[in-house]
Length: 181
Ligand code: PRP
Figure 1 (cartoon, helix red, strand yellow):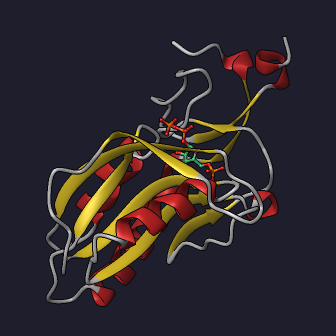
Figure 2 (cartoon, rainbow, N blue to C red):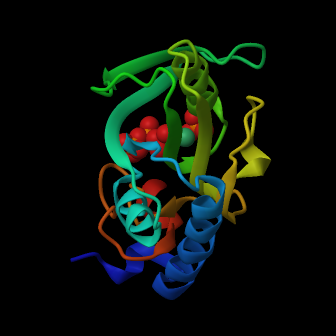
């Protein structure tokens, strides 16, 4: 059970998330009509979002998982990508939709898309639950963004602090007392 004092406030509640996912899923259904994209769920943060998104979509999908992180990034390069878990299927000539929980500096997504493009997918798009444009360093933009947020420390609905809070059903702002001690 989460200590209520750990959460400063709820930023996006369950109903807002569900409604927005429904809207974006409907847009994706239009854009992918007649196609069966490969959805790549970026672990761990996208687990909850991806599960809700694919169920809100009518478009049939196959699902793959990746665990990646970027390092050595600078303003001029997207940096190196460390791949802890790769997808199992061949994406050549396939439509690929990357599902991310948050784009912050953009380094992870810039390096990931650069790497996946070398595998020659027919198309490569990004959907993110949250976008923090104020923090962007790498030039990367999602094709679908559910919510743009300010530069706050967000947790819940898949997002963690020290691996905690992923199981909260809403996106909340973490209390400073949790990470400043
Ligand atoms: C988070 C998030 C993105 C990345 C965004 O992953 O899921 O992949 O950071 O940051 P960036 O735009 O600055 O690159 P994290 O490494 O925290 O892993 P997790 O999803 O397993 O918590």
